[in-house]
Image (cartoon, rainbow over all chains, first blue to last red):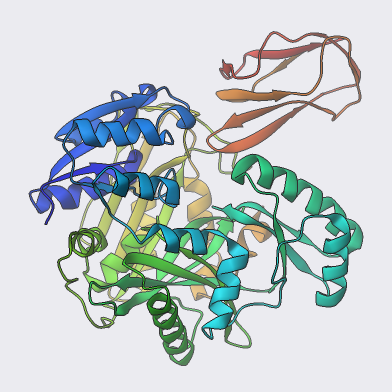
Length: 444
Length: 69
C-alpha cells in the first residue's frame, strides 16, 4: 500500500479521499488554489501545496503545477477525485511519466471512454445495447440534417467530448435541430476543444440508472450495485438512490452482466461507472457513457455494500488485490441528496460566506461536506456544498430519514436548494419510486 | 438605469459596447458563476452609456454591470 498520496482535488471529495487515507495510515498531501488557502481540505491534510490562482485553469486544472506539487512533496501516487483532471488522460500520463502511480484506469481507457462516439461504438461491439444513433462524428448542419432524417425525432444532440451534463440538447424537429446543433457545437468547441457532434434517439420517458464496477488486479470485474440518478436539474444529478426502485431484478441482472462484460473488455482497473438510460415501460436499457473515475454519488453504494470504494481504488492501484470478488447483496436502501449553493426556485448560483453550518448526525446518516462555518463559497468552483446521505432497512424508512436530516441541516449564508430537495422527496412520484428524468421539469 | 449583478460572479463575456442600442431582453453580457453561464439581459430598450466592468473581473451581488439610457 502507498505511504504518501497526493489528492488532486478540493472540496468534499478531497476530504472524503483523505478520510480513507488516514484510516489506512497514508500520509495525505492536499493541493489548493489562492481561493482555498483556508479551506477544510487543506486544514485536514498532513501537508498542502499551493498550485496557483483561484480560477481552475490556473490551479486545479494546471497539470504542470499539480505534478510539481506531487514531486516536491514526495507523493508516491495521485488520486484525482472527480471533475477537474480526473478524466484527463494527459494528466494520467504526466503522473506516470513523473514516476508516480495514477489511481485510476489506463490513459487509453480514459481516452476511449472520453469520446462518446468511440465509447458507443465500442460498447455496441461488445454487445452492450446502445440507443439508435450516429456511428461517426457530425461536423456540419447538412450532415446533421441527413442523419436526423434516418434516425427520426425526437433526438438528443451531444458533444462527443462532452460530460457533466454540459454540451447537450434536445431537438423535436428540423428547425429546432439546426438551432440546438449550432449552440451545442459552439459550446463543445469552447468547453471540450472539439466540435464533434453525435445524434442519438431520445429515450423518453427514461430513468438514469448506472452500475458501479470495480476492476480487480487479476483482470476480472465485479459489479457493486446500481444507482438511480433520474432526478436531475440542467442534466445534473440532485437525488440518487441505491438500489433503483425502477428496474426489475431481471433487468438488474442483465445490466450487471453487461457492465462486467464492458469493464472486462476494456481491462478496467479500479472504480468506474457504466451509465445507462432505462425505458421503464419496456424494461430495456441503453448505454449512455462510462465514467472512468469515482462518482459523486458513490456513497449510496458504500452504504448498501459496506465496501469503501476509495480503499479499493488504492488497493488496486498499488497492486494489492481488491477485497471484493463478487457482487454483494445490498443491505437496505440508501439515498443521497446533493445540497447546492443555489436558490431553490431558479437554481441560480448563490456564493457567499457561511455564518452557520450545523450538520445533522445520527445512525444511518453520512454527510460528506465541502465546507464548515466561517468558510466562503466562491464563484470559481462547482456549487456542491455537501452530500446528505442516509441509509435504512428499507426505502420508506430511508425516505423518512432523509427528510428529517435535510430539515435538521442548518446553513446560513449562501442560499441552498434544501427546500427544493424536500419538495422533490415529497412528490408522489419520488415517494412511490415511479419517477423519471422529467421530474424536476414537472416541479419548475 | 443601472443593470446590476444578481450574484457574485466572474464576467465572462461582454457582447455590447458603449453606444450599442439594445432591445428589452437582449443579452448584454454573460457572467459565469459556479460552472454556470448566466446571461445578463437589458431590462428595457435603450442605449448603453457605460460599462463599468471588464471581462475576467469578479463582481459582487448588487454591483453595476451596465448603465442604460
